[in-house]
Image (tube, rainbow, N blue to C red; front, side, top):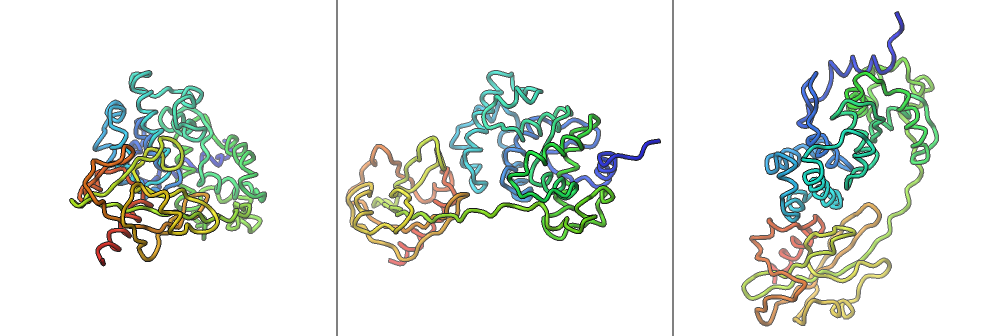
Length: 355
């Protein structure tokens, strides 16, 4: 009788300790590809705890991919608020439309065909192939990277060592129960092989861990120093009509926060903050503008953003510029507003309430 492999030990541990997650199938059953796909898109750059309520709300609103495909993009973006990285939501909607229209609502079952769909990259294609269709694929997320780096004592820093991590993950991946193996690796990283204070004594593959044997497991994976995020500055315009409605506009369909609603504002530039006089030149209309005290700070992946707010009252009650929409305050909740704009709105409402 041969000794159990690391994957054998891992699968035995997974059968006893697997996490219960709303997108996972019960033991011995196949996962719904729609559920796997939706959860994996949401989980990119986001924690499980944060994703669970979003996943449940999406499924309650759009139980099938056909219903998601038929949804209005604004509704999808509104439900996505708070998850960030809004390109994921736009691609989610596009992908649903393609799968609904071109594939009869059924996801392709091969990695190559999945990679052709909007918003599906190498990781998501592998996860779907493995977890939803139980076909062998090499699934490497942040948790798996950490487990593999420690297991094989990979001391070169990420992201440079990613290729080596995937090669080792490939050798670990079995032909038997590949979907369970992928989820077991994720669970091990999330609950035992954690970023800090790993619970090595609970690890089912401790005997195979070179990082533990060398006393460096907790220091892995190593990461190259991050570049300092620059700071950008902008001015937001809070323009009210006499009836209390506020002017919003839609951002361009592509790029950062693409397709989302926002308060009109200046460009976001690095370096010095906007002077009040030059900011007025980008105001949506003439008004008696005044600068509100304080500022809003928000951090994106690649830069910090500092916004100040100028408030103004519309002299008349026009229907609004072609690029803008007048929205009553009580209707803000139905608008696809990103978190940074929610912050700006809260700041503006607090600042104007004091006047």
